[in-house]
Image (tube, rainbow, N blue to C red; front, side, top):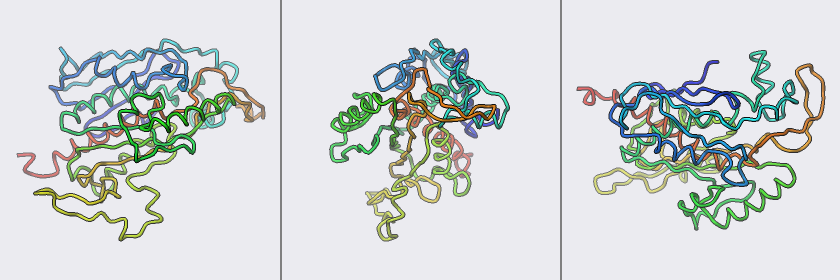
Length: 361
């Protein structure tokens, strides 16, 4: 299978299936001398792991990470870092009844059409379980970016038609409630909405916003490796994401140039902008403002309602999916968005080291 590696200099390869022995990642291109250990990486995996609230799958995984290589006495060696998270709570029999059935909203049919064979247990490689490896690798990238003074924070801004109130935005609140919403009242309303959906065997979509601060101007490339293009690829590679915005995003359709252009001014000896409609990126390169990304997550496709489909013998039938599934994907995916944004940004920052002669001599 191609396409399991991302990055040019800071390269990450993820591996593993939902119901296999485990999942993980190999990080290549991490500079030597970074102070990092399993406890630090675990704090990120703990935000993603299942079973933490009634709005997450009750699959009981500790998601304990082990560093197998690339780190000695808490410091990176500059060699490949191998990270493994063992699967401990897979119940494969939940999928035996639908081994040859194409579940609506899943990648089953595409896998059969492409490979002629697939791991039907929990979706195999296309399962959200694969993102555990991304989060572990992303923690390494985030640690490096933090050393550079760059911070990344993601949170849920909308669940169904319930949106946060920007006037009462509280980032700390997003770390306190299980829906990762930076608005206590919106989180309470969304909780009631999700409880209703769960009683009906249904699920909900959501919007995740990610803000990156402290990025200097000039990171990115002006053509195919645009910062926004690379970020879009990275975020869209998360299985449930169906749309992405940078800055004002789709709102620019209703805007005018006189409204959308961010005027430049001087803040002391620093070039700054009065507004940030661009979302921190112009011409494929960072412009020094906060980078703002929004990702639209589809409703969890595994729902506890009867659905019509076909099987590999092209017979039509109705199915009822068993197992343990999230009624909403976004809260556990917040840290996945942070991880993918961090890996992408760090890779382009490292690529920037050869953009000017005075950085080479």
